[in-house]
Image (cartoon, rainbow, N blue to C red):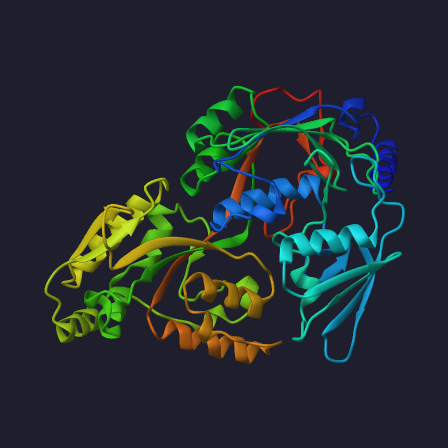
Length: 468
């Protein structure tokens, strides 16, 4: 079992490095206290949120209770999880999965192909058909599904079972013992997890907690894992607090409503794009966290982002703006719940004014708008699929219809989309968190997926934040 192996390796390391405190060895005990900004309403894969940031938080929590047929390794490649083997037909329309033996749901019910097929139908409805027999699951579609294993490793494709009382049972490392939607989640270790019991006895998650309150709770020893906004990361590091950051997993961008007369002319949209000082936004407002963006996909994901070189050009911005002959200010809206959004929106208005472009900044929901400041999370780590999901989120799905594309095809599709200036990328942001001194083995995936099952707590560490 995975965690038994971890304990063995830790013991060997300690013997080689004696004398050390016994408390520094991985052990089974303790409650990990986590706090999140998102107000997650449900962990039910059938009720997946449409908002990308809430979906990301929901996915993290759901992954503690439910599992998928497939997982991704550190390079984003599909690896066995609840399925240990798979194959497809020549057209990739029929996939066969061999299921892992000896798995049970947290209510003691055996894990079977029929149960997996039932969960698939509840989530996908009239989509590709799933049938189960013995230890084999078959998923079949009229259309090719060349990337199905990678698709099964993300989003709401968790395997679950609906119990007689309507509760959802999972096969994950933890089980739900208390659930207060949008407020609090309490989990207990799943003693019968197929990979071995997690080190932690339990996990508590506070929801809807502001970044400022999260840091206070960490400093006072009331939390072990809290989220960090970009402006908090440097302060936390200077204070000696342990921090962790993912790769850049979120795009900050402007999205235009081209049905509005003020932004129907692409030259006007390009003028605003050329007026924005992305490097200043990244350096000053985002505290040099992440990176300035001139493409939709970051370099780590696409491999070609460096080819997009859009520098600020006030002279050209003025020329294009004069050609458009705008009669009034552009209305730029932002999410009032996003603490950073107002400062970024205000900076864009200042940059635009230098090019002679008038921009009026307002909170979203206060009326019609020409352009809005949005965040979009990269839900997948395959370039073609990531670009397609972004395009769909921006209402531009028809521009990115790629079937098993080459890198050159993905690059061409992204360039064509950007040349419409319907979306203007501003910055890529990582996901960051701060950890209490007692948290050990916090090793999420590079793109932010949690792996709490291998986390353990050092009881000898001081209770408040700081260096271990």
